[in-house]
Length: 176
Length: 176
DNA sequence: CCGAGCATGTAAGGGGTTACATGATTGG
DNA sequence: CCAATCATGTAACCCCTTACATGCTCGG
Image 1 (cartoon, chains in turn cyan, yellow, orange, blue):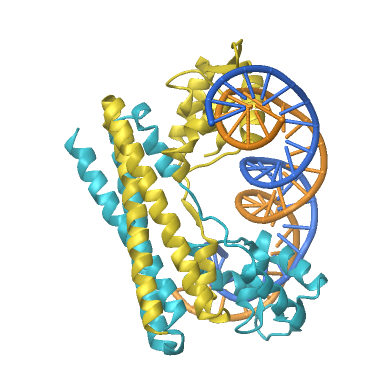
Image 2 (image 1 turned 120 degrees about the vertical axis):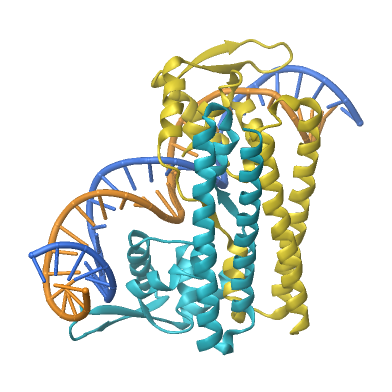
């Protein structure tokens, strides 16, 4: 799975510009995949060269013009090929956890600061997902099947992280 | 955080060869960081060139010789500099979740197969961590502080994933 | 005798990030 | 007037993965 696959997936619902793709990536998906403009724009150019998408320039008033890309039949087929390819292993990379692992070499105060920071981030993310869940259930009840499920899983995983971190902080302060 | 930092961290306890570093990476750490030989060996060469580690060839009987690396003072300082640098954001990348997100374009059976497979993997990981936890608590009660905590968090996060996936599968089969 | 484990390394390529470059409009 | 939002793109670089190359020993 790479940016190609994800962009082709996003374009199934509607034609999008690079900037809009970045925004789509912001919320529900950003928990499982992320891409910067430095990836998105070159990828779009590559997809167009391969004939998977079509570019159309849209002139806008009071805003910069934008290039909106739509899926071709070849693009649709390419996305299906991705779906039929073997599922890749998840990868989780955590600087925070690596630091905890090497915690012996750090003073106790910094350690608890790291945990508190991580809790703050995790709780922030929790709020964000809740907001999205409300929005989605209000505006788009039609996608209350798989996408909602996806959001739920994201929410639960994050909630578990928050809980575990709170417990870790308790244990850490206990053995002070 | 990159392979440099992690390798310097691992060498704090004892001198290690590239092959042994790969083994150290196998279990507790592999949940939060991973590296292949193609990364480890060139990184070791680079660390040596920078004066952060020292190479010593160890001749072994009935086994290939190995290059064992030990930490220098400069290496120790470099690792401290890493610990004092800002904590990087976690990155989680999940092909499985992306596929769930685009689940509308896949048939129901394949979808549930994916979930079942993910559950299997998650439960396998759970067993593995349990084993390590037992081993560690038996052999090395001295590291029952931060490293144990790290293992616990890893275990809990994984357990939460398993639970959530089971629930997701239930929901999926319900709306069949 | 064959496969698994031990052991080290290289080369090519993939896939990404950050920073830079540019520029218009809108709201506070 | 300044910051934020909208909008696109490039160039340098980083970091890592896969595949290849090599070769020894031990157990079944």
